[in-house]
Length: 182
Image (tube, rainbow, N blue to C red; front, side, top):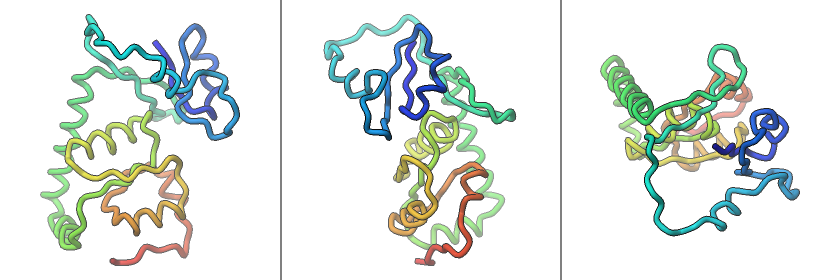
């Protein structure tokens, strides 16, 4: 098992990383990272065909749940597929409950475009935004980190039609900033 994290989380991952391989996905500081990077991992890999694993694949997603403390949650392939089906059902039910809102959004004529403003290693970023957008064929505009002003510019310039977020991010919207109607 390996841990892949951004350099800013090196100290946070120290306890969890004992005895495990670690790789840096992103280095903000520009210094030499304490662990090999994803690029180095890929460059040093064997391009020959791999044997399939004996056990079905799994994914560990970070979530803070109700405690607010980040923790890893193990998820099977079946659970990920079920999650996507649940999101699809919720979207269909929402559209049936409020067809006027869907009609107004469709009337604008913009192709469905989702802003990904939460990390992909978090359940919200991976499941609620990335995988559901991929499954639905929606265009995805990805931000590395949330910042209100660039986000508003992206929403306007890229004609973003959807933003799935957490309350902390939504609360950071500054008064006086607005997005045009076009």
